[in-house]
Length: 87
Image (cartoon, rainbow, N blue to C red; front, top):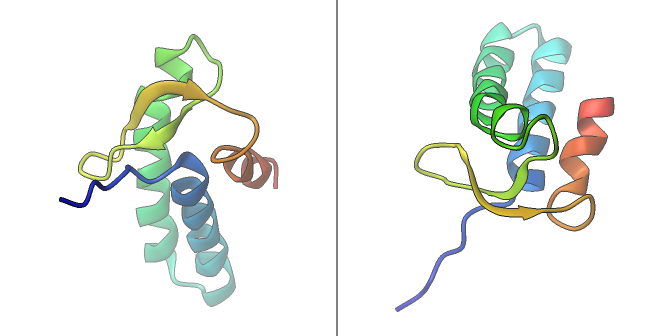
């Protein structure tokens, strides 16, 4: 049986940031609305509440969109998310 791993924070977060940019450049607000919802879900159960304001875990549960696990990283699997937040 093939074991699937949950997507990483960098993948999920980066795609949402790209959709926000797409909304800006195309004038289609629905892209931003949907991508902001994903960030809101990450934020509501991610670093801000679960880790006392620190970093988010690097895995995201695809069925809920909520962070999963306890592994946190500035490097691989998390770095792109934080880089895009700064932009």
